[in-house]
Image (cartoon, rainbow, N blue to C red; front, side, top):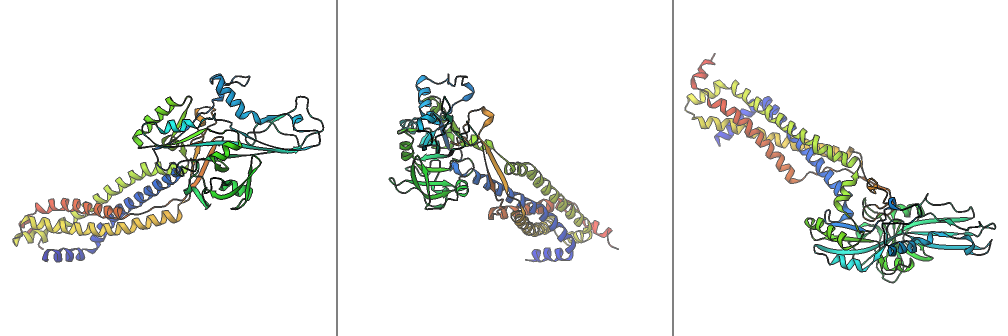
Length: 488
């Protein structure tokens, strides 16, 4: 008890040096707390961006994209078999029609077509085959199409050849005559039996609910599409001449399916004359270690398959979120190391200076019979108390820094492209179809955990221990005669 009382009295007697040492350690520790909290916040923000993958590293998407760069001038696709070419023509043949076939000049008409501009469908039986591959935990099929609605009046002067190409997506294809209106929207069929594995999941529904009735025509719409069309729960959307009641509005996270409307898979298959066919398979591996092997097995099982993994998507994420994370990983680590080393060095120098100025005191203690170990304990104990004070002060600084980051840090943007660098394949990650690029804003947080606080206090104590060790080495070499030389 005497030693503790003596330590505290010495620290109070040299209050300026005590505060200065604790402040130096506190700044270093506060920097560690702030940078670690910022790094944790960036990790959480990135996890939020990749949330649609549910198990990052364990999910993948399978499709059969058409490589249009290999198409010849006649419009054929020489890399496909004749059967596949016929299937492609059948699925996309509704995009062009003759005006004469619509009726007599002056008659009104309305027509709906479903086209897939980038992916060749395949039998839904392939989903079960993929599900049986070793290492696959679950698999669900999906169907992504463009729904084109054309209505108007048959022109009086119909062109000789008759026809125009309805745009498969905004800005594409030929323009219709002025008295003919063409509109389109992207639609995805979801296998509601696998709610957590597909283009849209219950967790992404921000208003309303997920699919409930197998027979009723229900639709979930994307938030951006609902805002653009002023749609609310209970409104309806028309697909293929059939009305679907809007039961939910969903926010599609970055990297997820980016369709305007989601309906049940069987209903879209029936509407589009694609019964028993899908063009995307969502696959979950049993573990991240199985992803590579599963992807290879799928590509060898399904002819022409293209497998996109969660890792592929993460590699394509860019924007200020990634820039900030990279900066925190490099500059932040460097700042922590430099800050801690500087704090430890300052504390050691101040302790060494304190011992030098206490030569008369410490030498007198030795002359009175104090063994060397007690002198070392005295100096080290004082440094540890200073380290504890520095740790508490550093935690307060770190919490303040984390609060400032949370309060004033701007929202960060994360973007992901459709992989255009791979060539003109028009197929985005995880079945995005014709979507060129998606972006999302992420609010930055800086959470401070109990483990981080305890670790920060531990670092401060370590700094105090190092400083005490340096001072103790100097104190251990003192002799009683040194004290006599400093007596006035």
